[in-house]
Image (cartoon, rainbow, N blue to C red; front, side):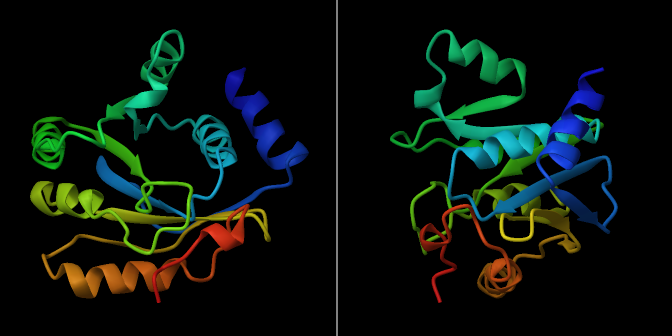
Length: 183
């Protein structure tokens, strides 16, 4: 029932389309961009439920206050402290290695504000766990959710980040002025 409601809200009422051409294996990380609005979260949650997916996501710990924290954890949220440097990439890569399934969505900008210095944690998690990164673009101009590229990182982070940023140049966030690939 929830899946039907989410499909109706996202595709019929909201006018969104999907173009997903890469396989989704048992373990992967979604790199999602652009991230310029809190509406990205709503669209992502509707999409996930419309497609019958259960994907965890990272979110700044400030959102995990009571009662919101209970809700965000229930729907797959993992709180991240931005002030304390932890070994989160090591921890998440170990979890990915041990589990039969692992699905995690990360926005590399790390903020809804304009940020040319994208976070690389998603890359390191995938590299250490040897799982693919699926590049998901969220385009508000075309009302399109698209994923037509994935890869397993081999460690050439500068070259791979350049390729990732180039991939996302064709997408327009809700607030296009807040999105940059740093070029």
